[in-house]
Image 1 (cartoon, rainbow, N blue to C red):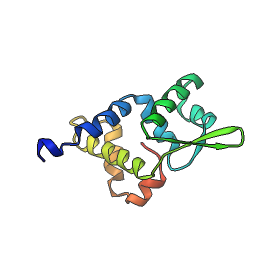
Image 2: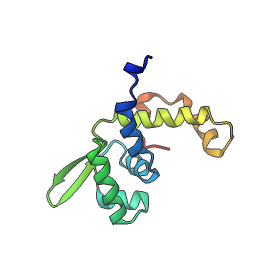
Image 3: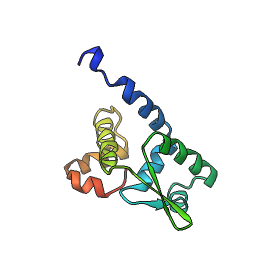
Image 4: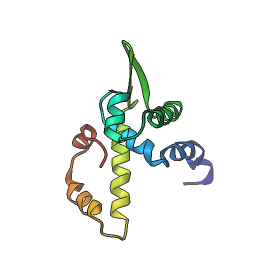
Amino acid sequence: MNLESCPASHLGPVFKVLAEPNRLRILCALGTECRPVTDIIHATALPQTNVSFHLRILREAGLVRAERRGVFIYYCLPDPELLAILQSLQAWVAAHTLSSTPQNQEDSVNEGVSMTERRVSSCG
């Protein structure tokens, strides 16, 4: 890959948004379903103001989309492939980490999981 085709200018801002652990927790909590803010709050155990703040940043980055359903706003991943990408990245990190933590051992067991199964489950 040469310098002109390097994806840094496109991926850099996305990785900057994803660098915040609570945003990753929110994306994983969404999984492949649209969820109201209250469900995200319960799944992440984050305060409502914190969840709303991070959802705004994720929405502005194009990593979640909002749907109004009556008086509630539901948040969804714009494409289920995003969850598969996050899971693949997690598996890659686990496979290339020198430490043997329980999480890494669990990821090794899950290596045989198909991409379809990964898409319907949430992040580790």
